[in-house]
Length: 326
Image (cartoon, rainbow, N blue to C red):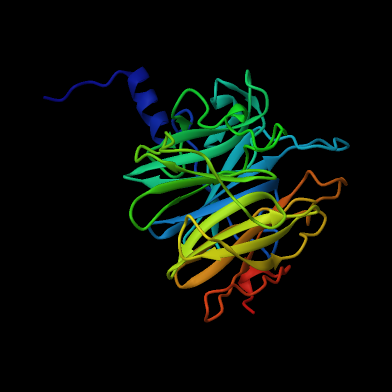
């Protein structure tokens, strides 16, 4: 039996075939021409991880208006690539306002996957407890959308009393060890770390500290071929230094400077990954900043190389980036 389709329904059916659903957004594709890799907006504090056949890059978004001499950051951004040369920008997956207990500041963060869920650890300002805090968001997809996993902070400033500053609970970095135990590293002027429960949203033991020479902030923990690497920002303006250990609990052996001051930026923040047989050093500088100050940063990528003993060669920052291998 042939049914008659009413004109209004037919119109809606035709429109639905050509008009995206509300909230839908295609990823914007682009191919960087050297460093910085993102040129249409300021990006900072990169974190990256490999999932499937792609790299997912997460950044903060510097939005300080001209003349403002401090950080203004309200959201985190997400990019992906299957070859590190051609990229997609995805819909904004997470904002500071998505945490009801926070009052703003989308500072450094990192995403990790466990059991099909994606956990995003973020630095953010608490609304009722003085100082910075670390929150956790969760999603079923690396591109989001993400939502607050706890409804409260995982780490607050009153939980860390080794230093009296209010911003020592920032820059989370997370790793799942070879035995399945997850660890969270973070800090400013003190490098903290703690075990995480398998649910990834609760601490599993006391907060401990790592003694590192001239530690400033931005710890990044990674594992490769029997070695643990703990890189971090040191001094100010910041360089990146690193230490190595055979055990995630130490002892850590300081290995020196990994890369120098990133031009036109007082801060330096790194992510280190292996992808399809090559190693990469992801960081930010002030290469696009024409407004002055140090609060409008841009993400860059260069190759990273290891020595035979596992130590890392000093990173050479380039304007060509990885499109032209050294």
